[in-house]
Image 1 (spheres, each protein chain N blue to C red):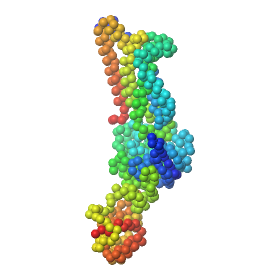
Image 2: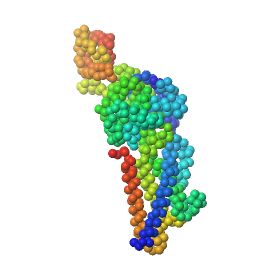
Image 3: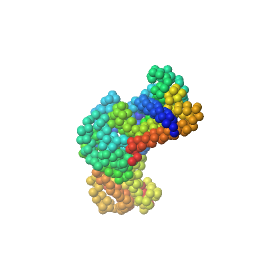
Image 4: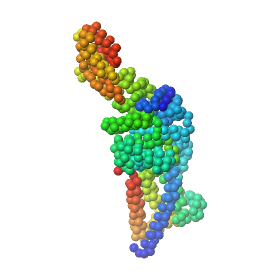
Length: 345
Length: 219
């Protein structure tokens, strides 16, 4: 649905150009919820604006639903933008217009007659549960309600793509959850392709199918959320995940020296990540039964990424060097991810 | 107050109101689009055209830097061309209008700049044309602020119209100078000043009330 190829964006500054995006390529499939995560200033807002050409890339091509956006004339571009909805961190509603008029705004731009507009706006207000607020002004609404208006407005012109620019960053956690559920709902009901820009891993984890991590204008890691989450490659990705999940080490081990070499009488710390169906397998009991090792469970939690359950567990293996080695080989053969952290006393 | 003083005051008030109202309407009709032009043609605006923007800004600044009393006299040939005469109330409306156009332009520019860029960006993302952004976003969103700014211009016009006496324009200021000052009639001076204060208060009150009614940002 969306293909960005070799996007470069350079801003002219007093000391020459400042590169905001460097050779960014990504593909978003139809019906997918695609997350782009990065720190502020990483270029994610610029990147999402390259999709509807609010920012014109310096180089590279943007294809949305088969249309090469950069080659369109001004009028064609305006028409193409009508099939790309967008919601914003600060909602960007018209303060002088009621909820109804805000949602009707894109339809009036297209010159639709008022009867048809009413027939479209009313169901949208029900969809976002704001039927009773139609005649109120944005200043009378809470943040979550304002974002619902933003969503209804973005959906009014029946877009194929919804761009969300930090859409939940100004909202409290409960409201964030409700808005994310709404976006997910819309994605499923309408088959809408969604691109979400965020700095919160929670958002990615709750609703995205795929994720791209952007650092200093470069996409450093991308793939299915479950893969990136359970097997992050880059330090920053790990950082994002640890902000969400904690380090996964119990307090007494957080400052303990960790050695790469076996310590006599010590334990080998191993982190296991179970994904989907493997979460149900009796791995630990088999391990203890078949190999002559002790396995202390030091930490564990079960969570889900979008709809896939996954668990994380930290175990301490102790036993003879051979037994521990055999136990590790057994774990490696299983359908789970293991990360050997090191030995502690 | 003797009847002759009262009738003098009423006639002068009528002249002042006529000068202010006509000049204000004419200046608004040109000044508001000028303000829109100053904002939208600026760098990064929806009709960006920096060369035009700089040229218009230079003309605006030039007119605004001429003191009104000098502008009034300096443009007498132009006034005669437009109003058919260079003296009297009607003639005074021409320089009053001309002086108010750039003033309104700058005031409207300030109001439009207060519209958050995010709202403009949202409209662009929805495929709005530049004219739609001007009519459906900039002007409605800035309207309460524009009303407040125009109120200031009306009050400035009341003040400037006092100088219209210099070209025989009449009005309250002229009455105060000719009767109150030059003929030593302090009661006329006092009455004129009281009427002027009442007039300005009324304008300010009406302007504030309207701006407040239109403002949906604080409810």
